[in-house]
Length: 284
Image (cartoon, rainbow, N blue to C red; front, top):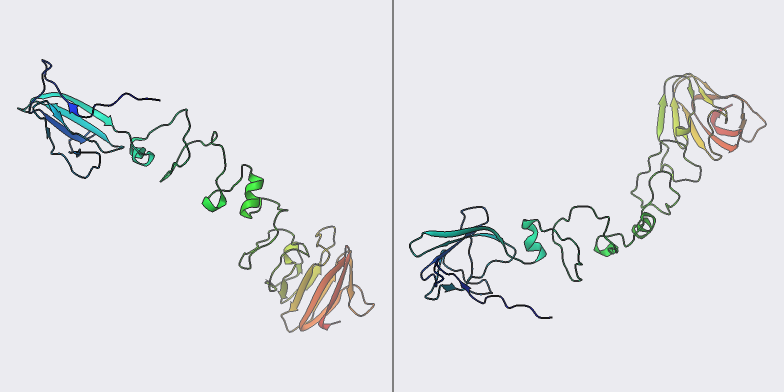
């Protein structure tokens, strides 16, 4: 493939077609009167005077900065303006063209192109993947992206395999007996008669009066293995009752409502769908 050679030197003519000897070429930032340099050769190391003075052939070496838009003003030797052309855009790298809001439609951007800065717009037609090591997901589907990133799906998750030790798990519903739980027994302080709820699983109830009631499985379906500690934080005994299910005192044949002495401590453990076992100090 061959290309037409560009003009190696810029040449300007007067109205009669003769070289514009001593003519002047002024260059500015596009849309302004702020001077913008041109250069004597492709290296861009040495700036031309501004204006550039044309030689006896009406010529000059004028090299523009890549990726920049100019306003060019041509005048004769006495500064009579011949013409002005604004927004003369120079080609250049994609990064240099950023200020000109270059739109690429059709065609293909080859390999080895580097984008610096933000790319905005709709990516519906972008194909391929970006490796995780390069800031991508290495995948074309959400499921595979989560796998590659070691992430979990939103909502009810079945794909969590592990959690780092500093991850906080906040539960707003039932905490399964075999799920990740508390590292301690958070306190739920009560000052009146209290019925256990699902969120009490793994906690301790510190109660001053009124006693504690374990609800039926039909109303509060605690998972088997659910455990709640009850502390009688008072100088009087309190009761620990159960509604329609069975509460058995460990190591005895006793069932039903139990009494917890002042400052006594008891633990209730659900061992079957409708069966709880209770044990502790100060329990009768």
